[in-house]
Structures are given as structure tokens and as C-alpha cells.
Image (cartoon, rainbow over all chains, first blue to last red; front, top):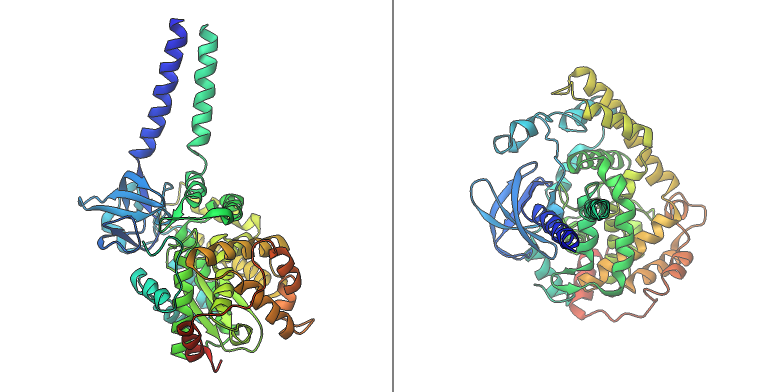
Length: 160
Length: 304
């Protein structure tokens, strides 16, 4: 029977180990301007910013939100979809250069990047000015929720 | 006993690895997450369809990282805007962005590398396009099919669904993706040298070609379209719009579409079929929209 107990203990330890590995992991920012908020909600105050490719320490999660700590010590919540467990490649000259490790920078300049876009534009053209103008139209979460409210649109569960 | 213990430990390890998703932890967590809540709200019956979409897409989603998806999307946008002129009305565009960006916030992919941005195209054609990463285009002709903000929200939610499901990226031929990833992943190349850039640019150009052909000429498969409609219902419901806006808009579109036309008539299943497919999720209904919503829709898009 001892060996059976041992098996149970071992499996428990393995399961816990797995869970801890998930909880104590590092993730990478997968959006250009990652926002770190003081509460797990788009309405939370922005307490920090994290750039594409930057690593953050994961300290827990709540629903779709992940508790993170930045290298400078700032901690807060980031939406799950702004983070990835994969290593993300950085394009050459990305703003995040100062905040990433050498290993991550080794991937710089690879893939479909600003450089490839510039090369493509030379031969194919395209109305990039209109795309740039389009990208400048941004509303923050609070403004969007206010907009919904003014139109009597009520998100499920309220605007948490 | 020993071999049994070993076996048990081994099996558990395997199960653990599968559960914790070594292959695609993001997809796993997204699937789990979408069962949870948006702004604390239970997602309810609609979650199942969205989850199905997300898991089916996990493979394609892994191929390109968010930054590459962003650059593909920009060039798809720039190509569309070489073909269609942007509609210059700032108020109308601001309004479409407010509705669209609010909806995106309640999708399963509220954050993308460059964010969601919407633009009206100055064309009488009934059409809408979603480029990878969140650039969404909608024609004046399509807006004329929208009786009110609910219907507009339905069209935009369908496009956000295409972004979330990464449908445009699926149009890229597998061989190109493989070739691109071989170059990108090549250990020898620390920084893309000239030759690599021009090889990548060629693959990039072909990939854009694949997407444009599918988006503008052939359309996605019926399965992807129906799935986008179902995801749209989820997004509309979470945001607080009556999902009946979708079949309503489709009924209006059915009246306006010219059979054999080079727009939605060509690239999408017939509106009637989409309404039938949606029947269990959202019914055509007379929607009395609140006065404030009616007024702002009229002010922004009354003359579209």
C-alpha cells in the first residue's frame, strides 16, 4: 500500500507543480501599446505601459485578466489577449528595444515587418496614407462605455 | 507495483501536458476564458459557438505573430483603399468607429497589435471587409441597408468576428506560410538580410493577393460566414445590442442586393440562408430603439 500512497503523493505533486508553473510564468506583450491597469477591467486606471515583445511576470489571473509585474516593479492587470506565452519577434527599430533581452532581439527584423512593407510599397503601391489616418482614430474604453450608455446600450453584467 | 506507478505517473504527466497546452496555451486559455465572463457577465448559451470558432482557428492563429498579422492587415487595407475611396464625412466615420470599437471590446479578441479601426468606403456597392488585425471597411451601400444602430452594430460585429476568427489569414495558401516561417525561423539569419527581405516581400505580396482574391472575389466558405454570424450574435449580446439587428439587416439587404452583383451577392451566402441559419439565435423583429440611439444614428448616417 505504501507504493500506492507514494503514487498519489507523486501525482498530486506533479499536478500542483504544473499549476504553479502556470502561475509563476513569464508572458510576452503581443500588442503595440500594452496597458497595465490597476483593476482587472478596461475601466481600471492605467498604471503602466508595456510595449510589444516585453516580458512580464505573471502573478495570477481573474477571468480574462492577468496580474502582471513589469521589470520596473510596476504591477497591475493586463487583458489576456494582450499577452502571449510565445516569444514574439520584434521588428528592427521597434520602440521596445530597451526593454527586451538579447535573445528576444535576436529575432529582430524578421518576418513581415515595416521593412517588408516598405519594400512591397516600392513595387506595388497602395494607399497607406489612408490606412495611417484610419489608425489614428482611437477611443479609450471609458469613452466607448459612455457612448454605449448615452445610446441606452447596456452591456451584460453592466460596465464593470 | 512499480511498473503500475510508473505508468500512472507517465499517464498523468501526459494528461498534464495536454491540459496545460504545451502546443497552444493561448488557445486553451482563450477557450477557457470565453466561458467565463466579459465585464463580469456570464456569456451564456452563445458561448459555445464562439468557443468552437476559437479552437478551430488555433492552428492558423499560431502561424503569424500579432505584429506580422498587423502588417498583413495594413497592406490589405492599403490595397482596398487603392480600389475604394474613403468616405470623407468625419462625423459619420467617428460614429461608426464608436459603435465598432465598443463591439470589439466585447469580442474574444478585444486587443490586437494595432487595435480596431473602422472606415466608410465611398461606394454604392453593398460590401464590407475585415483585414487581419482589426481594420474594418464598410461601404455607404452597406450602411444604407442598416435601418438603425442595432443593424449597424450587427454588420460591424460580423466583421469583428472575421477579425477574431482570423478568417482572412486562412485565405493565405499553406505553402506560402510554410515558406515564410522557414525564412523567419532560420537560425542562421540574425537580421533579415537584403535577399531575405526580398524573398519575404514576394511571399508577402502573394499572401496579400490570396487574401484580396478571397475577400473581394471569391468570398469565404459558407461555414466561415455562418460562424461569423454566430460570433456576431455573441458579441452583440455581450455589448447589449439586440442580436435581432442581424437578421433585420439581412432582410433589408436581401431587398437591396442585385442578383449577380459583384458585392455581397457574390461573396456571401444569400441573406435568406443566413437568416435561416441564425433562426435559433436571433429572430427578425421590429425593434423599437431608444430615442437617443435613433437620434444619433440619424445625425451621423442620415444622409449616407
